[in-house]
Image (tube, one colour):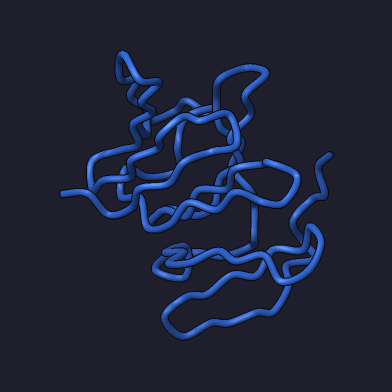
Amino acid sequence: MTTRVEQDPEGFIWIGTQEGLNRYDGYRFKNYYHIDGESSSLPHNYIRHILFTVSGQMYVSTDGGLALYRPDIDAFESIDLGLSGDQRNIYYTLETRKDDCGLRQEKVSASSCPMVRKYG
């Protein structure tokens, strides 16, 4: 089931599903999944939200936490938010100002995430 569809600044279409993330370049799909023991894979296959910041960075919210897409290595970097268990289910990401990232969970809310390393 599709959970999210977004287009990045380069024109790629990103499709989040309950079973991973897909990138469509206009000709073919590339699939991204969580792989146990692989730190550069998604934290979880259930994609909740995709955010492109003003600077073009892509954050992916999953049932296993938050990840930053690294186009230079075509992989993901998990963002450690110090959460555990069901708290790791990140439902929404939003940009509050400049490059600050807000996170919204079912019972946890923050207007900014200072523990997220700044990129760019």
